[in-house]
Amino acid sequence: MWKRASRGRIPAGIGVLVLGGTLTACSGSGGTEQAAPPSAPGGGTASATPTAAPAAHPFTGGRTGLRNPVLAVKIENTRMALPQSGVRSADIVYVEQVEGGETRLMAVYSSRLPSRVGPVRSARISDLHILPQFGRPAFAFSGVQSKMKKYIREAPVYDISQDNGGRAYFRAGPKPIPYNLYADPRTLLKQAPKAEGPRDIGFRFGPAPQGGEPLRTFTAKWPSTQMSFTWSAKQKRWLSAHNGRTNTAAEGGVLGGRTIVVQYAKTTRSAFHDFLGNYTPLIKTTGTGRALVLRDGKSYDARWSRPSEAEGTTFTTAAGEPMTFAPGQVWMLLVNDGKPRIP
Image (tube, rainbow, N blue to C red; front, top):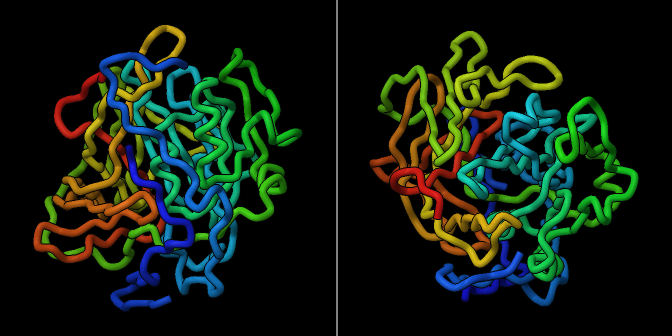
């Protein structure tokens, strides 16, 4: 059984490094890993929102949206979904393995909102283990299997799924169901007026650390798909490709971030599976492990640490110093620690 995160436990005061200075501010089955999905701390009541806004946004290191609510949205990441809408506006983009060795995105918004986002798809159990570090954010998705509904109700999120989001969701474009469901983020947030604002989740922003290895392209691999990131000195960010094809945004341009974090995390079999019998992966995002951080055309070997689900994930260099990110969008690639595998 995983420990219940304690409600009201907020990570240590924000210390974002900017420009070299510190600113304080469906059914289960035998043979599965029987780690229970997390419950809402304190019986599902909201924690106290920090009274003072941070001096820089803890998700991007920027200066905008310091008091904006946090919205997480599940987005399809297979060929049928491309090009995706709204991903380029996210502060953080998580890439998570799902059934069959494919991946799905969880885009986290706060500093700015796109006009629409999608294709919106269903939630997975790993989402509920990632989200507690954000306090109690709004969580948008298109549904979950019936046995997971109780865990959504108990989780420290405001459920603004398709079932609860009303007119925020709509179908558009030529793609077939389920690849044509989109949502209006501003309308979504009206359904979660108490969604909490940004807090320290462990990221540190500032000048690049010493060292690092020059790198032009990195490819992250999952059992049935891969994503590549190529450094663009002109745009000063990493441009993505999906299975060898340029990953364009529906709004135009190529998706990618200033910082790409490859977080190697143990991927095991959860107690859930889809209607075809494919087990849902459970990504262990607490504890410690290795990581690779890409920024400014270089790669840095790093370590990650997340003591509990109520706390954020910190990254350190091989020398034990804080691993600083380049201000801007961060991609978090959750990759199995070992060879790609379907659990």
